[in-house]
Image (tube, rainbow, N blue to C red; front, side, top):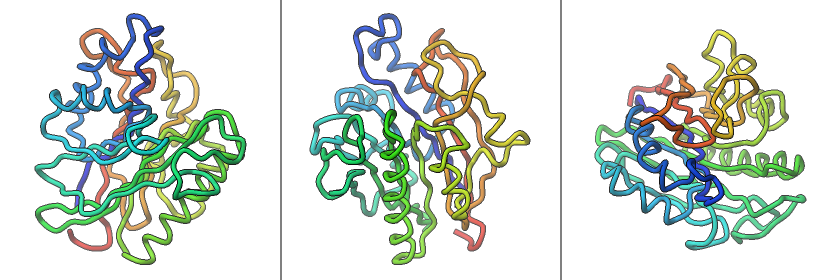
Amino acid sequence: MLAKIMTFNLRLNVESDGENAWPLRVRAAAAAIKRHDADIVGIQEGLLAMIKDLEPLLPEYAWVGEGREGGEEGEYSAILYKKGKWSAEEAGGFGLSETPEKLGAMSWNTACPRMCTWARFKSADGAVFTAFNTHLDHISDEAQTKGMGLIRQRIERFREQTGLPIVLTGDFNVGPNHAVVSGLERAGYVNAYSVLAEGSQGVGRTFHEFLGGESGEPIDYVFASPDLEIAGVEVDRGQYDGRYPSDHYPVCATVRRTSVTG
């Protein structure tokens, strides 16, 4: 198995963004995904209308997910995938709250409802893995920590039941020293930034508010289970047609299976 895994916060369609508003960025966002030829794209802040805007520009992709308030309501942490290479065998989602089966619920002083989307993918040559994608709260440390704790519980239960490798993408809204990130690393999950000579500490910012630049820390991550290895990672700080595709840089990692051939 060899796959390119991207995390990409699209930034909501907000009219006050002016020249950076979504209708002026949609082609740039599609171009970024195409440039990396990503197999799997975990998006954040994608309203349904925004995902629909991308569909004709990315005909090689299908997607799974629902709004964080249930059904078509609210932001999506959807997962896009190359439908010519992968099929989504199973998919679902859960809320990051004390009642995870009820989307839209809020716990742990979160500023808004949060969720995690997951899907099990299979390729034509038989490779199988599961992707999890999330967007943690931007205000509450308790919600960030407990939300990731719930995601880890679900991932670990899934791996116990299936034995499949997993990737985890998301806007975690925390820097590399936060317990959300260090906890994943201590549990054996591989931070894609670990393959860089400078590691997470030298990656620079991934949230740039349409200003560009590198100074700061990442808040967008790709993690992989211990039975996968990271072959490379790129924070894409480029512009497309003279504009940034989002106020976050897309991050794309190449992962491959280590323990078995597939």
